[in-house]
Length: 459
Ligand SMILES: Cc1cc2nc3c(=O)[nH]c(=O)nc-3n(C[C@H](O)[C@H](O)[C@H](O)COP(=O)(O)OP(=O)(O)OC[C@H]3O[C@@H](n4cnc5c(N)ncnc54)[C@H](O)[C@@H]3O)c2cc1C
Image (cartoon, rainbow, N blue to C red; front, side):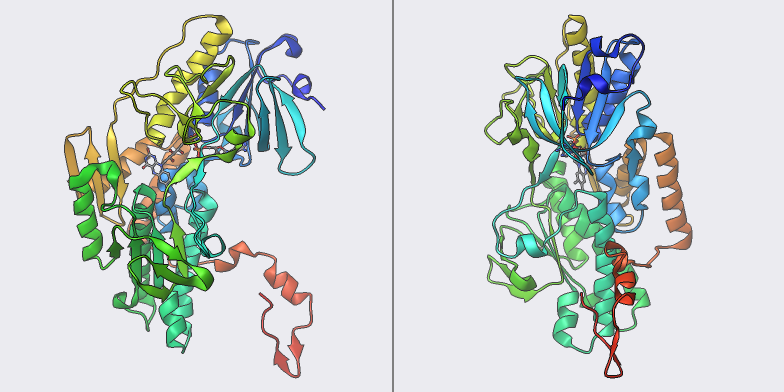
């Protein structure tokens, strides 16, 4: 069934079937900000806008490490799309195929049968997914930190490992629970290990049998440095900061196996670990391969400096799923800084295509990078000149992200979370069963006592 003509009118007046349809695939940074700009700039009846995303919210990913550490509540790092986008149709589900020649996509709603949606203009904003390698055991035991669910899970999981270690008499199980392995020393990996080590270190206060020296955090990085985003000087200072905290950073080292949670590294080290976090890079969302749009050598959508897809009409792309030329023979790095700034240019170029006017090229000078490495610790490089570490970098990190997180509502909520954590100190309540909320009810629904003894839990 072709659906586009049946949509309720979401933008302006007139006969809906006559109104051009702009379909945005992905409601993250690029998708949400593009839709917002289109809403602001388009006249009544000029176009209908639809955003398709499996989630009903946009995720502010730079706050995920702080979410994993419990400094920010999970729901405060997401922005409900329907609240922000007042004149856009939001459809929750996935685009699973794009036939740009026929100007249709196959849409799979979160529940129900897939259907076809027609469009006049498409904006590809599906972002990236974790880039994994075929390492034995990785898919079974690893976890990424790209989604708010993963961040919330990690917090509960780390606290649960401390509970396990504090409750067992088995020294091997205890050692395993207190071994935490993070693979990838880029932004996400360095921030995640630093925040979670901070959480675990702080939490040892309430565990009588666990001291800070019992915790073993490993950062495994294939390159010979970490945090390339902040430059070699700040990166090496950040590396020293992590080492001084007791984090075992292994450079030029690879994860070789994680079968049954037995970690084997390329430097010969071998040990059991209850936690394996994989942050060794991202790749374009696989939906771009399920399309007839041209792709570059690394699988990104091949895009011009006008954020238009190369060689076709009516298709635009940016953010992590696209390669956008930087005018110097390379491409802009896939980060939030670029996605947010590409959105208004892209939206204006969609409008230029609608109105038959000239598009604008995307140009951006890198502003630098700020990383939070736990409470009062950080690394930052601003405007290529200012280099900060420690507390000043941490203030720069928090100030920038408070400014950048979308909507006043979220800014105030994040500020409230930080203020409460400052006044009341960190909260160590972990809820590991959150991932299996029906477990207690399922247990209650089956026989639980046999031969006068409570049966072991099934899972
Ligand atoms: C832990 C972490 C920390 C980071 N810190 C920083 C930082 O400090 N500074 C910085 O500049 N960048 C940072 N980044 C990178 C930044 O978040 C990304 O570059 C940015 O989100 C890219 O925006 P995007 O719109 O391309 O993709 P996203 O924001 O990821 O949005 C993609 C959207 O597409 C949706 N989608 C996926 N598949 C489909 C489908 N089949 N159909 C429809 N929709 C789909 C997704 O649900 C998602 O909502 C960080 C990333 C992570 C993971």
